[in-house]
Each structure stands twice: as C-alpha cells, then as structure tokens.
Image (cartoon, rainbow, N blue to C red; front, side):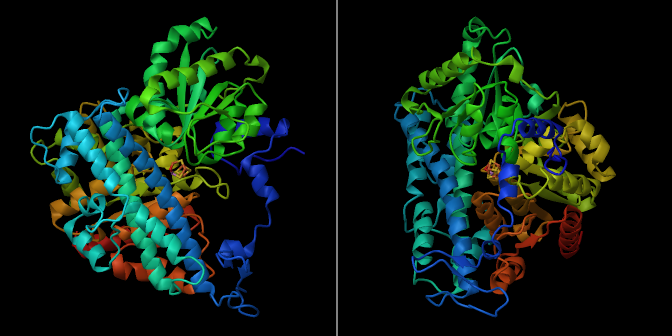
Length: 636
Ligand code: BF8
C-alpha cells in the first residue's frame, strides 16, 4: 500500500526520499514509530519507575489502583526522578563534548597535537583573563595549556563554584542562583550527585529533586559555553558565510561525504584535509572532486566556520543515505540513529564511526587519533574514494531541492555588524530599537526535530509568526537546519516575512555592514552547544541595561524537542530567566506537582518557566504575550 508522506515532513526533499524508501520497503524512523503505536501511557506520563529491580512499578493516573510503587514512591517522586535522570544524561553528553575539547587544548598547549593549533588567540587570551589566569609573558601554547587545565578542573568537585557559569551571567543572576544553592561546584560531580540522589531509597522530595535538576542544568550550561569557546579557539570564531542547504547540494559526479554528530574535533580536520585531496578524488573517477556536507550539529559546526552545506537534520538523517549518492557518513557522537547502519547496507555508503565509545554494529570503525588527526582524516576520505567506485548509478536519486542560506553569526560577528552602525557602543542601536518597539523582543529557536511532529512545521510556522510581529530570531541546532533548508536564513526572507519594524532594523544593520541588503530573517548562531552564544548576547544586553535577564523581552523555544540534551538545555534556559517553550509534551504530566513547578512556580524562583504547547500558532501567541508583559514591566 502506498503510504502518505505529507504529514511526515515539510521538506520536499525528505518527502521524495521517503517515497523511495517506501517503494523499496526500507524501515525508516516514521515506520518504526508507527509500529510502536499505541505507545505506553504510563511512560508518556512519566509514572513508570524501573529504578530498582522490584519494579517496574506504575502509578494509576486515575488514582483508582496503585498510587505508590513498591518502595512507596508516589507519582511526584517517580516523575521528578525520571526527569532528573534525563537532565543528567543530557548534561553528560555536553560535558563529554566539552571535556574532549579541553583535552585537545591541553595537548595542543603541550605541543603533542600539532594538527590543532590555536586559531583565535585573542579569544584564548580573553578567556584566560576571565578565568583569572595570569596571561603576562605567556605565549599561545602556554595559555592553551593553562586554559585547558582550568577547563578540565571544572569537571571535578571544587570548593569554588563552577567558573564557566559564574563568570558568564549577570551578577544579579549569579546571586539569585547562588541563593537558591543551585550553582554546582563540578560538572561531572553534579551528574554523579544526581545519579546518587535518584538511586533507590534516596532523595524523596520532588521539589528538592527539581532544584537538583536546575543545579545539574547549570553544569550543562557550563559545558555548552565551554564547548563553544574552546571550539572557537581551536577552529576559529565563526564569521558570516553564504552557502546552500538541503539534499540538492549533493553532486552526482563528486565523492559526497557527510559529517554527522557534534564535535568539530574531527569534522573540522576533514574539511581542512578534503581540499588537499581533490586530485585523488578525480583520479578515483569523480570529475567534480569531493563534496563535503553536514548533518545535525557537527554539520552546524562546519557550516558556521567553513560554509559547508547542511543537507538534512535529526529525524530525516536516514534519508541522506537514500539519495544513493553518499559515499560516506562519518560520525562522532550523539543523535546518530543506529538504523543508519542498516540503510547503509542497502547502498555502497560507508557508515564510519570514529570514537571508541560510540561504535555502531555493522559500521566501519576508523578511530580518531588526535595526535595524528590529519592522517586519520585522509584515511577516512580514502575509504569514501574507494566506495565511490562501487556506487550504483541506478540507485542515485538526488532531490533537486536546495536553498541559499547564511550562517556564521557568532556573538562576535553580530557585535561586529552592530558596530558598523555605532562603533563606540555597538549594543546601543539594538537596545534603542528594542526600546522604540521596532524590535519587540528576541526569540532563540533551538532543539531537534521529533518524529511526532511534521518535520520543521512548528519551527517554520512559529518563526514566520514571530517575525511578522517584529521579534528578532536567533537559531541553533536542528532548528537552525530547518530554517536553512526552508530558505528563511536569507535577506529575501527578511523582505518577505519580517514586520515593518524588524525589517527596517535588519536592513539598516545589513546596509551598514556592507551586505548590500538586510540581515537574514533568522540568524544562525550555531550548534546546540552554541545556545551559549544566545546567553552571551542576553547577558551583554542585561549588563548594559543593568538589569537581570528575566526582566528582558527574551524567550526561547524548542518546538520539536527530542533529545535529553534538549531537556537539560531547556532547564538551564529557565534557570537563566527565560520563558521557554517546548512543542512536544515531556513525560511529566503524571505529576501535578512537577508540572506546576516547571510551568509556574519556577518563575518565582528564577523568573523563567516552561510553556508546553503543541500548537505552533497558540505557542507563538503565548510567547508574544510574555514578551508584551515583560515590555510593560520594563516600561517600554
Ligand atoms: O545537539 S538539535 S537532534 S543534533 S540534540 Fe541532536 Fe537535537 Fe539535533 Fe545537535 Ni541538539
């Protein structure tokens, strides 16, 4: 039977490849999701506990049967503990990512990793100064070593609070979080603390546990911020780039290689090396050489720094293989579907894992060795060149869909663009426009696609509605990918969708910055760890106005959230004082207490709170209402 693909994705490239998948009877994430129906109601509400081996225990949501698990845990406790473990898991992923970079920085400083020189020395020096490291008479390598060691020190328990958190948020926010006793003293130590607290027979106070969740999320924030900064130092701070997005960038006569995962540690080196191997690719028969493309956040990293085109994201990653034109998908870690391996077997595509702790059954494993990264990258690319010879032209189906996109809007790039308007006081024009109402507020779109939502629909519907209402929009992660593929990160989109006030501001800044047109409707600020750039901008605005972040008309949204990392990021966005929308219902509704704290009581503690709303139109209205009320409170 022919399956309908219209409700699966707004992206025509994905829909056409999904049709091919159906014809060939491949198993995709959408098919497997259907096979899971009906999904477990207890799990959906968060009231299934399998923490101990006396379980699994389930709470009757109607209160007619079991109201407690065997140990006595009630729904509040079970939901809170499950949520905390998700926050800890999300934090551990970002922590692992940041720690990986900190190790590279240390070895770079010691001269053991010659393939990782310092690319942004001023940023390294500024970071060292912010961390209180004596920079006098230190060269880049010495500073790299000192900063790398300070970064590694952040992971274990210290007597002082986590430096990456304490030094990057407004003083008033730091005081608030300190008073709540939610500033962790070590990133790994708080992850461990959460696992301890949620162990059988431990912390049994749901509200106390939720405060622990906020504490853990601050460690997640620190990890994200650290990952952004160390990546910029090692691979360069992004500057605006123009490129294209979506499957149509793949080339029939090139060796197409996708980098997928999260860390630029390998993908950036692959970008550097690929350009040196063009001749080799041509000798392998590919007249157009090598075409590198990105998937998910590693794709965002190389998009931001090198303009490498992103082809697809999150829920549709399998479809990249169904093009039949990918020689290799090179992955590091996180958000990589295990099913890629099964699909790769249907084609000549090599799925290449590169990290010892992230192997996939059936994949080729070529482990990254940072002491010899360039050679490893060459080996990986040569594997793709070999695969090219096995490509079956009759299986090639490259959708023609692609859109121009801009990216590379690091905080530094945004400040640089603003300084073309006012060189002495770059933030002033932005604040003046917020105050005058030309910009009503700022929304940061982040997070994944989710198989439960028509891919990108919530992102696109909400962004258009907010832009029409003069909200300045920033985006990261797979959300950034959604907008790039939809052509919304362009000056043309500004002309088409921005409200008059927003359009005039983006035009004035774009013209002053010499772009010959407005800034894009949505500014791509990077991968998911680069949500830290959003806080950096919010902190700069708050400091300039001498207010706290929770007083500003700033909001965040993850309208198609999936990963545990999205939960930990959402939690720190709330801790930072942001009203934070999620467009997918998280598994917390089984507890009134937890739901009430997240959506309401949190505001009394941090100023931020969650808005759970699955309808994108309604979600936009709710965010606009919050922005309006914050403006009123500020008297603007
Ligand atoms: O870290 S947005 S699906 S790729 S978790 Fe994953 Fe979600 Fe994409 Fe980036 Ni973020």
